[in-house]
Length: 271
Image (tube, rainbow, N blue to C red; front, side, top):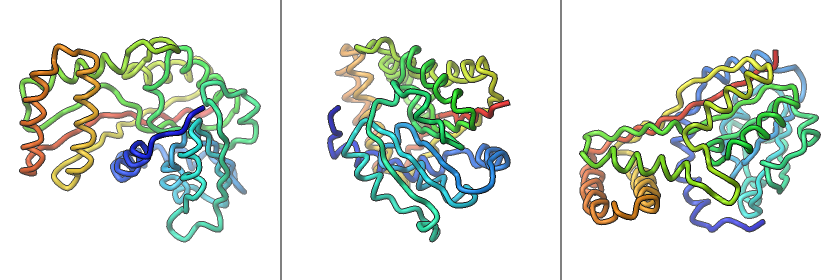
């Protein structure tokens, strides 16, 4: 398993404040009401640099042990150096485990009081979503999955080319890979159905990025990736996309572009 380029870790750091602002506090309140007393063991799947732990640990009661899973060693080293804010470092222990989270054996989560993931489901195939849900459901504990893309993006002011780029990007999210066809925006609905079929009570809440003039660096980085993926999927859009990108970057520079990227957060509770 390889290691990530530094640029990806930089992207994760850039998006972390927007992720934190978007995640559903309502679902966390519902989750906390179900947790047992005493020390919590939390397994975070696809942890990246540990942003979920940094955001969620201060919102959970009691001492905690977080087990952070990722296939990328460089990201895990950054996650291992995480410090939970609000003076709670002494109450939160962090360990890391490197491996493919789409191939986890259910016993890996046997000690979990909570399983979490973030910005993950849309990268899965249908088989991978099914395995992910089955593994999580077998743990018999709550599962909180944040920031799953829905395929809806709104840019204000609008541009006639927005829809063409959005459609091409969503097709790219559903592209066929060596592992199979990715579910992309359909992944969260597939996960909801699979958790319900496994007997869980499932609740979803919106968790959209709301980006404006103060988020120019993130908007620029997100927009470049959004258009780049669209053109990769539809090379015939390249010439028009170049002019479109120039218009949109002028909007960003002038502080007049607002972007809403829609996500859903999912909480699955065992019945």
